[in-house]
Length: 348
Image (cartoon, rainbow, N blue to C red):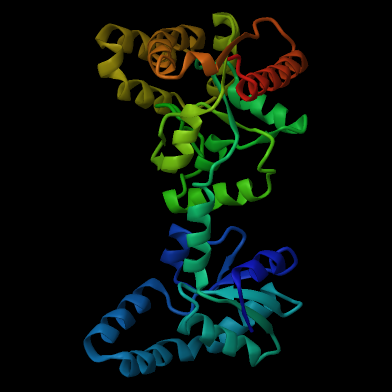
């Protein structure tokens, strides 16, 4: 049964999703929570595509069945094992032959199949537009080590709307940001995941995001989303150097020395020879406060330069030094309300 995107978004709340594309296509990007059961693997898909261009659809179709036919029973057994209720949503790239074949194949063993009209392409067009819609954002900024990500987590627990861009990107946004993280998704898959988060949020109350540059590791933020971040109210937090160093140490002290050194070396041109040498020696000696303090000199200058680009009238500075975590969260929420009241009721 063919279903529209709106029907898909409702049905997926209760039904599993199957992606019939090749493993390479799936790895690059897919509908979150989908399970990959390829009709054609990467090598077969390439061969069929070439044959289609050279000799037409009939020969390509026959060749496809020749390649896949011997393992039809394996595909059926795998689906039966994975989906005991035999009821699924299915898609391929454009809702064409691959999903039709898999739908027919599973129907032969009692499956009820709902096939997404237009396939993954329809879903991807939807997520592309979703992450570029206008939204009310509030940006949490502050120098390295002010625990912005931790604060975002606790704001979410307090009932605030939060999007953790670094979590979605599997990267903390610095030369050290990829250490200890799982591989980054493709830009397309990042946008799919971001769209799914945004779909769950109310469009009226502001959404907290951390201040980021356009790139988080190799992820590039959607153009309009990033533009909105730059223009949105900005809460710039500060803490003592001692608190910042302690927080960074808690996150990085247990990471492999060699990876920390490689991250320092990436910054060597900006740090200069002496500072790079001192940082590397401190890492080797396990003197974490020393190498962290060394790098903060560079990161603080870079942050101050970026902060100058943000409109001062939309920026509120908050000193959180010495406050308990709960007090920090209370102050952030109060300040958010103050900023948005100022934005909605400007003094003429």
